[in-house]
Image (tube, rainbow, N blue to C red):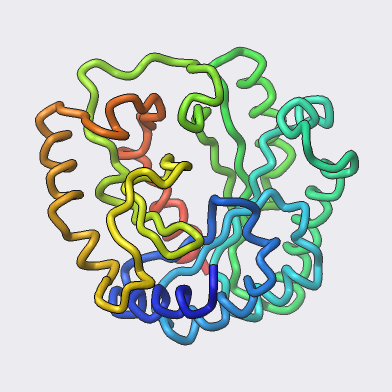
Amino acid sequence: MEMTVFSKIADELGQHPTSTLRFIAWGEPLLHPNVVEFTRYARKAASHNLLTLITNGYWLTPDLACALMEAGLNLVEVSIDAATLETYRQERTSIHHDAFSRVGQNVKDMVYQRNEKGFRTRIVVSFISYPTRESRAEYTLFEQYWSGIADEIVKRPVHTFKGSVPVIAPLPNPRPPCYCLWARCNINPWGQVNVCYNDWENKNILGDLRDSCTSIANLWQGSTLAQLRADQCRGIFQGICAECRDYNPDAWSHPYEQVVKRCCMEV
């Protein structure tokens, strides 16, 4: 993402102070060369908004962690997904051999810096839970280890990433509307607004923020999303939603936004 696109996003975000900006998806956000500059700009342009970031933690070095906290990041979530080296290697087959120990140390170093320097950033670790006995046992170990270190531990259901991971559990019947249509506005690195974060091929684009006449609010309140929301309230799932297997049953009762606000309010 270019700075001209990001600054437009942050400037509009500042007009809606209850909204949260989250760096996530389309790759590891810490690899973007301007992630600190983006955070710093957003903090000035959207001074009352919550700024969050999700990372695999490998590049969360002490210097970068400190820079992000100084820039005004409210919350960082480190997606670890394992309590043991064996499980981590199964989950993250393409990552560096030393990643498990490095990620854990990076989180601990960030917590230490935060406490020593008095930053207000909250630090969360997360775990993807499969509906198996082994996964439940692993999560128990994960929770025991990180309790007292991280500010909060998040457990997420497994995600198929549009079918690339075998389906674990059937969709509920009847199927409730998707929470994301009311809670998440998805902007890809080029400034296009996607209907859904699961649209990896960019086939369902609401509009392009590089167009000077296009705003996030107009797209969010526009006819396409309004129709999708109305259809799903009637049990009709069309387009990209028709084949989706990634319904999160906890999203309505325990939305992620509650985790963010709870953590940040505890400061």
